Length: 201
Image 1 (tube, rainbow, N blue to C red):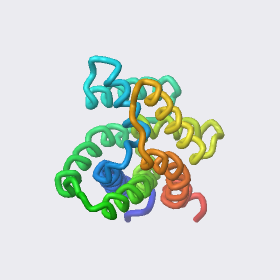
Image 2 (tube, rainbow, N blue to C red; image 1 turned 180 degrees about the vertical axis):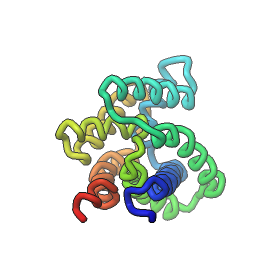
Image 3 (cartoon, rainbow, N blue to C red; image 1 turned 135 degrees about the horizontal axis):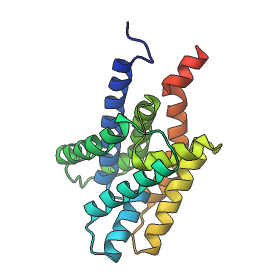
Image 4 (spheres, one colour; image 1 turned 120 degrees about the vertical axis):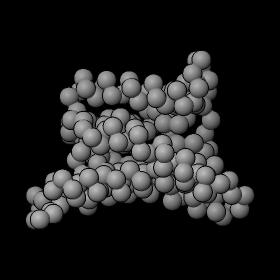
């Protein structure tokens, strides 16, 4: 019998969540009205070093994984899947969506991007099979008593500040992502966390 806490159901939620997460990231990129805070950090790091944008993303992910191990944050198959799946989904969605010139379409993509990312986060983190490198910082802070929305906003804000110092560029979409992602993640995670739902049933 498949229940909310059974492995097949959790793996399904993990897959759905990562796909939605990737689509949300891609929508934000397609909107092209400002990079997300972490991407500004990656951009700034690339501009200050010999790294490309992509290699900066990989290096930051590796460093964050080491930090999460030091913080004893529980990792799992979801952590590895996060690294492998999201990038592929982002690329596929951008290929399909292209580069729209219609301003209304771009604004809608930008507004919907962080909401879809948050929905995907609720599914995949709520499956409790391990967070991704960057989401792991949020869950690590949450385990130490900081509310999810505050933790996510703090992490995104720190990434944004570091990126700006290193020469990254900002747009109004960046601000929208920063202020919306934390509350949206908390909203969806509270409703999609398998452990929370199990304890309340």
